[in-house]
Length: 129
Length: 292
Image (cartoon, rainbow over all chains, first blue to last red):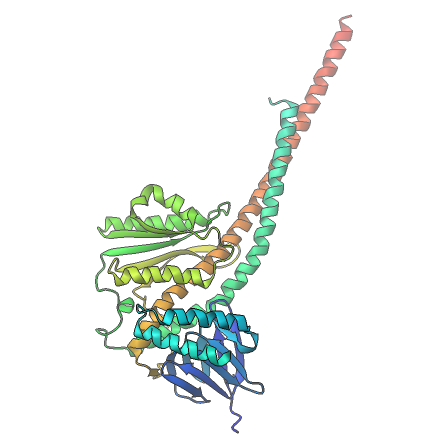
């Protein structure tokens, strides 16, 4: 295992959620899951609903719905309106979210892009449940 | 010359006013600490967001394809001004400072022959603006019933603005709010959010990295720009909240001090007239005795 570390920071509008050293981060990027290691080339992308996994001694997982990611100079920056640590989410929250999404997704007015987002949200939530 | 009783009553009323202003100052001080923390914690998000956009715009060269939110509609005809103020008064010059700046801008826009549209957030600003510029107000928001303004409210306003922009309702959007510098200094600010103002100052300091974009720049920009508008509005909210409390604290501190001065002055007056009346009575008694 290469022990080269880089810093990862998740920031929400209200506060900085986490800032730590890590070896690898897996993010649910818009076009698929993406693993980021040290010395990745500079990157800007955005997120779809999914799980961010930050691996250090103890793996941390965060549930996100959207956000923007920038990686440069071995600094990974994740800007998101909301990121919940998995261990802190309670089941009832997930269930109500699932119900909401299921209602929304059958609505015809929703655009394709939104449907894409919603389907991922549903999948992620179901996998958590 | 007011009677002794009147003076006594006035002293009492000033004292109770002083108690109120003192209490308000304490409350403001407690709230300020929280609001200031929030404002400081919220700064990185909006700053980093702006940085990312800057990086994106640097690499997105073909300006024809860039999203309209970034480069504007190409016209400069209709200006939308978003004025953010508080819902409560008694905070010194906080609300009027924003309105003063906004009004001077309104005047400029009108004299230049451009069309003015106004969105007000917070009831105090609306009260000050509607007399002179009431007919330009297209929308008003107030979060009086909310205890704390969250990102959702900012997003709501942001969406409204983006919607109107997409309907070609305006060409340029300016945000008015108070920037929190420290407890006694708040600077009213006008920030242009659409089209994005390009900061020329820090463009050369950052060495241009070549980024990998996934998906391509334009698509990211299209996703990011509406979010950026909400973020900037939220930042303005946070700065405003901290400024409001800071401004209220200093205003109430002054009020408490003034009330103290007034009480001192009135007490001297009261003692003087009490003494005068005693002297008068003595003279009357003496002269009465003499005449016997």
